[in-house]
Image (cartoon, rainbow, N blue to C red; front, side):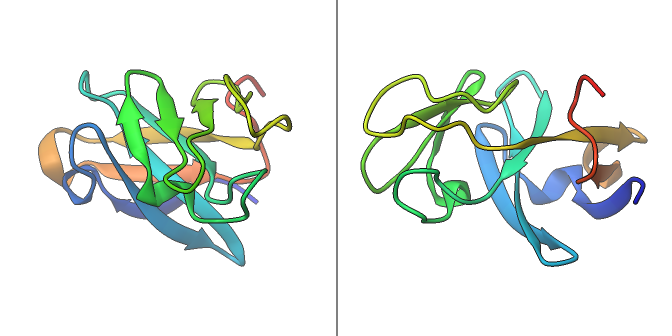
Length: 112
């Protein structure tokens, strides 16, 4: 698979997250206050709930159910109760402003 457009940048509020599906893969597209965009699996590794419903703080996303925080850059949990990381995916923003296309590749990590 390659990059697939999942939303427009304006669909994701600064310091917000949007849950989307790529094929059958749930993905949380996350936008930081500084307009960095990340893509992370939209399932908490502890509570099996949508991470896109949590709070964004810098480069972290907090699960709304039990408060586990995940690093958006590598998916690692930063505090209990989660102990397992969640997958992160390569993301690309094409264009400018709120109409820029957000593309995700679920087959590649950001480093790959």
